[in-house]
Image (cartoon, rainbow over the protein chains, first blue to last red):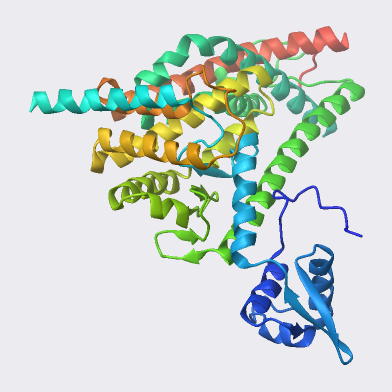
Length: 139
Length: 321
């Protein structure tokens, strides 16, 4: 059963630093056991083997990785690709921008929340064209 | 000690609420002035206006509780003894109530700050792991056209591959210049400050001021990009990106169809950029000096007002300290 998501998590597809580190290792080399994953995690991020094991368990419950038993150990592989995860996160960011929940965290070039109809966009296009013509005439 | 802290907290909150109400009521009158200025100055002054109730209340209350300064700023008067004094709540219950109220506001501010910081760190960590560092910005693999600046103190720019592919080199340079301006101005931090101060402000006024601040902030970055590429080119890029997002967006439509959206206002502002007024350093200095004078003039009525209110509430005389 999935654990209840922490209320401080801003994105629905949120992952911690160690979870991302584990996924990185599995994207590079699939079908690894916990010990091999632990060795592949960058030294700065590295924690104990048992922490990596519990992280793998969490990812398994989140359906981000799957596993098969080889001998005495489980071998893990990623169920979600880097591109898919990033795509989901970008979708989450757009949704949160739309809800106005990221206004003090990030600034986006164009407000994705405010929609405009085609006639308003065409009107703006006409205004820009007129300005260009005025500038050419001034020259 | 509890009496001193409780009095400080009660006076600060009361003054902050009062000043907030005054600033919100005056806002519709003063609002057009922010939009006639160059957005660089307009956004800075609006932020200052926004912070004023909070900062001025804090500074004035602090001055009120400094007897040395208070002697200069408050006209001399005596209660039972003619000695230097500060307004003080003598009812322990009232002092405790003031202290709890102040503590609650402080905790609420700290909580907002920490939770927003944690969200920001969470997003940064994830995008840093999944993105590709290209020096000027972090590239995100994905067809969705998206560009944003994330972070407060050291903000990073994130651009999706979808946007890179759909934009020309000039468009990309304009977008990056706009985002660079956000980085240099630390706009996310400015917006956070404004948001934190809105804990005290009434919600109805805060929403309008926040959306105006966001608009002026975006306009300031548009104008910054336009200094190199021209106002018309920036307006064209804005329109292009808006169309691109509209084509790929699955968001519900129509809600804001009849209102002027931020892109519409930004493009119109760019096309009429020459009408925006620049501020000279002496004018900015004059504004800051006026605020300081206003704040020092506030001390005497604040002292007497607090004493009157304390007497009224606690039915006791204000004793000298």
